[in-house]
Image (cartoon, rainbow over all chains, first blue to last red; front, side, top):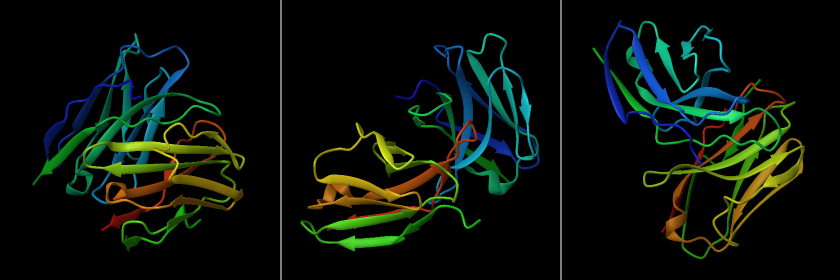
Length: 111
Length: 113
């Protein structure tokens, strides 16, 4: 079962940073935080993941609080193509540990 | 790499018919997942294979659903007999060893009339 809480929807102006929050207050020490997004009618797409340090890649940045009970996905310069549902997932890495998707945040980037 | 390949993209069938969905994972990935997505229930994990062996099938809704992975490059999800409530998008995903995450196919849109 999903162990994360996300706002159901958010808007962001094109060109501005989109900051998507996620609460995972019951996260355990060996659970990673993963972010995926799903653009309408496509399969979910991996964005980024991390354990406790902040992470950055070509798509986004992941900021994890020191107590690891929450995180924020940052899209630095949102474009219309970033309109999607964003899922935050916590998972222990390893065989037998599945990815459970919650309801996610529907992000709309506004021109 | 072509990514995870699913077929067919769309399937329309009548209640009571057998439906078989197919998936080819990314070469070298040793884990394979089947998910179902509906508006009401979101993305649900149905079954998970590791090295072709089913690890967790607790998400399979009932005995009408079965999944196989006869080799590392092919998996099927079968529904027999199909019912209208099985209408959904079915996704297959594969994952390599370690924490890289899931790579999803484009899904099969199933409509059972």
